Image (tube, rainbow, N blue to C red; front, side, top):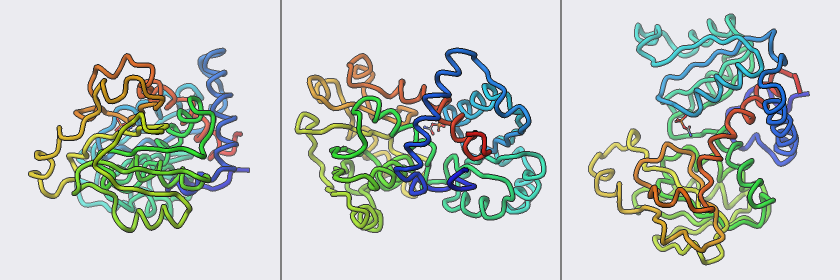
Amino acid sequence: MRPFKSLIAAEQLTPDVIAQLFKAIDQMAEQIAEHGRIDLLEDKVVALLFFEPSSRTMMSFQSASQRLKAGMVFAQNASSTSFEKGESLEDLIRMVESYSDIIVMRHAMPGSAQIAAQTSSVPFINAGDGGNEHPTQALIDVYTLNKHKGRLSDLNIVFGFDSLQSRSIHSLSRLLAQYPNNRFIFTGPTELQPSKEMLDDLQALGAKCEVTQEIDLRDNVDVAYINRLQEERFSDAQIFEQNRRRFRLDRASVEGSNCIVMDPLPRIDEIDVEVDDLPNAVYFEQASYGVPVRMALLAMLLNKL
Ligand code: CP
């Protein structure tokens, strides 16, 4: 039995749900290695609505659907749909629910996932709603983290460099705050520190939170979770230009530490390419888990696990 009909926010990914999903993700990875494609969703159609740019999320959902032999319908760019003519999100979802068995949507408006999930009669997956949440990325992140550290608790995690606007940082920190004894160290430009509301929420869940401009990855840090400054979300372009290369992880700051370096990608300025061949750098491996992770989620929400 699925734990919920739609995935909107990372807080739904409780430790029990994560344990169930980790088993399913391992099984999906084995099935890919053994058979390439399996017929688990051959009677289903997945709708992929991407109204903001995406490479990894869109293509890994496509690949996951293909590997499960589901049919697909697509909409890319609001300008290629009847949004352009003024149609509402609710009306769009009412139409798409009759064309598909599950809807995956990325949309620039924070809160759009909640509206779509409430409207839809079929399961819904949030593939990123503006600067709010990106829960399927958080699932990829904890799966990667657990592979390398063997646990999701008792961790010291540095988050940088745009904790205010990064939906990936929002979702991962909210998910990990549900596990005991995690300490979050937020670093980056003063203007891009996490909001007071976010810090209060995380601390209420039990996470220890610090905000600092100085980090030393050799100082007992387990994970550096780095995400680019979210250029498309700045209301003041000057703040972006002033800060875009000020905070950057270079090889010297990582080499010799026990800290893994993660990034939901795309990488722009935030990590030097010279970090890529260090054993600490796991961001491309992290991206590779997108397919089995999204296969497991699609199967779970379509009651096929
Ligand atoms: N991590 C992530 O969401 O990447 P895309 O924007 O390319 O989908």
